[in-house]
Image (cartoon, rainbow, N blue to C red; front, top):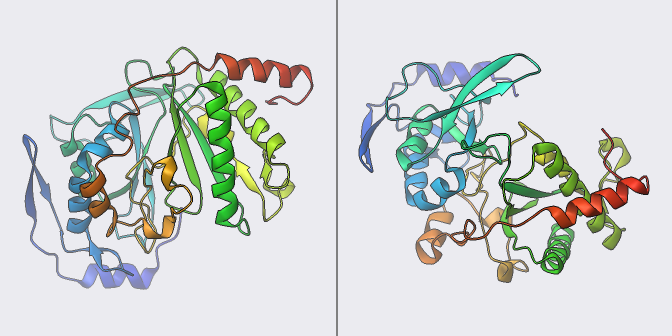
Length: 329
């Protein structure tokens, strides 16, 4: 969490507040206060621009979030200010907003998190100053059984993006050998994500074991580029870390079509495998993605059409564990 620059907060407080606007979103009216507040100082994009962006990619963002518990990354003063990680939907939310209750045994607490089922839910979150949407990889039907496996290609500071592309291609080859379809997207930062729909037959610990086994296979095939070393001190600045731990319980990532809290308002953008050689995350922003979406639609539209088994990967995990190369707890 970053600290708020006091001068910036004072400047924001001294600005006159713009009148609210009402947006018709499906069957609901969402009131947007301070629509002219600048959320991205570098580009000048406002809160209303952010809402209009999410409306423009509505089918895609709802598909990515549908019925998943969702943590909200809020920026009440815009991305130059403080980031607030919010799990609980506050009191006073509209009656039509849906939530899902999660239990956190470690703290013996629960949280009623946003559960998106329609676009109005997303725009309500924007009204609450949400920029980024970070859903769980399970759905409310059974929050303890993930239906999504996430491959996170996370480059270290000196890792070239060409390496990320090359390893993503290697990941696709492994998935093809397994008969599994993966759906790639930019992270909105410097990396790439690949999402796979899985049958909800396993708990988080098993999905994490499977993800680790896949990461180890990528490391074997790309020994000069890939690492699975958990501790940063054990990685080279040029390494590409395959972050298997993003599949652990209560770990979340920015979903497809989520804007990121960056000065350029980058977007975690779905793309097709045919675009891998040309995709540049810097080109995928709140200003450019709506045109892309209007022309191509949601290129991840078919992601829910087929779910895959983790059984082969869990066999790999057992093999690795027997050889002393498995996932340590």
